[in-house]
Length: 459
Image (tube, rainbow, N blue to C red; front, side, top):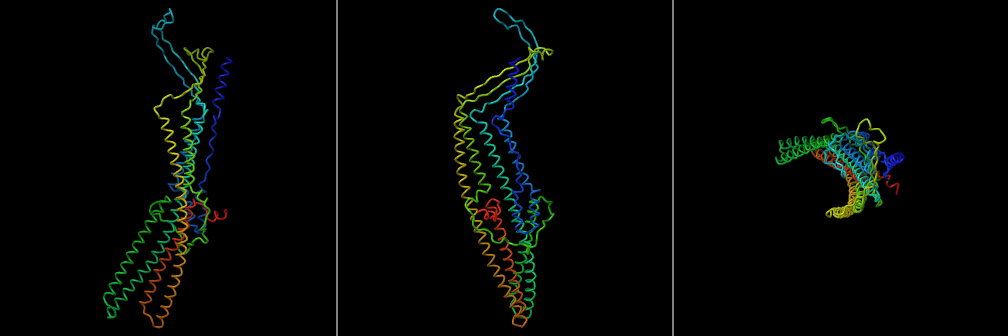
C-alpha cells in the first residue's frame, strides 16, 4: 500500500511540474499604437482622424491580420502543452475466450472465458534533457513575433494607403472644380471666336482649334470624374462601407502640408520597421530549428507509468487486489533513419543562411526606401514652392490684363486666355500640394510607422 501511495504522489508531481515550460504571456493589444492616431492628428483634419478610427474598427484586412495573430498564439499554446506530461484515462471492458492450448509445465489450462475490467491512469512524459521541446516552443514563439510584425506592417501600409488615397480624392475634387471652370471659359472663348469669324476678324482655323481645345478639356473633365468615382469606391472598401455610401472629406483649402518635416535620421531608425524586426526574428527562429535538428541525433528518454484498477469481476473492481501500478523509463535512439536526420539538419542550416541573406537585403532595402522617400519629400517641397511662385506671377499677369482691358488695351479674349492659364497653373499647384502631403506619408511609412517629429526629438 505504501508503494502505491508513493507512486501516486510521484505521478501527481510529474503532472504538475512545469517541464521548463513557462506560462504563455497574455497578449498585449497594441492595435492603438499600430494605428498611431497621434501622427495623423498632425494633419489637422478631423475627418481623416474619424476615418482612421473607422479603419481600426471595421476594416476587414486588419481583422484578418488580428485573427492570424490569435492563430499563432494558439500554436504557441499547443507547443507549450507538448512540453508537459500527458495524462489520460484508458479504460477498457473486454470478454476473453481462451482455448485449452494454454499449458504451464505439465499442467494444461482448460478452455475458459472471462471478463476483464481496466480503469488505469496512464502518464507519459518525455524528459527534455537536451532542451529539444523547449527550443521547438521558442521557435514557434519567434514565429508568433513574425506574425505580429506582419500585422503591424498591415496596419502601417493600410492606414498610409488610405490616407494617400483620401488626399488624392481631395485633389481630384479640386481638379474637377477647376476643370469645370476651364471648360466654361473655353466655351466662352469658342463663342467669341465664332463671333470674330462671322465678322471676318479671324480664320476658320482659329475656330476649329478652339473647338478642338474644348473637346480636350471636356475629355479631361470626364476622366477626372471617373477617377473621382474610382477613388471613392476604393475608400468605401477600406472603410467597409456599403457601396455608394460615399466618403466624407474635407475641402482642399483646409489641407495644410506638414511644416519643418525632418529630412535626416540616424541609421538605427530602420530598426523600427516591421520587415526589419521580422527578418531578425526569422534568424532566431531558424536558429532554434537548427538546435532541434542537431539534438535529434541524441537519445530520448520517456518516463511512463500507470495507476488504476484491474479486475476480472465488476464487484471486485474496487478491492485491494484490483489495484495496479507500473512505472519506468523508456530510452529511444534511432540507429538508422536512411539519412533523414542529416538531411533535415543540412536543410535547416541552408534555411539559416537564407534568413541571414534576407536580413542583410532587408537592411539595404530599408535604407533605399527611406532615402527615396526623403528625396521625394525634398523634391516635392521645392516643386511646391516654385509652383506657388508661378501661381503668384500668373495672378499678377491676369490682373494686368484686366487693367489693360479696362483702358481698352486688351480684348475680352485676351482676358479669357489669361484666366484659363491661371486655372491651369492652379491645377499644377493642387497636384504639387497634395504630392507634398503624400510625400510626408511615404516618409512615415518608410521609417516603420513612427512619428517623424518624435524620432528627431529622441535623437
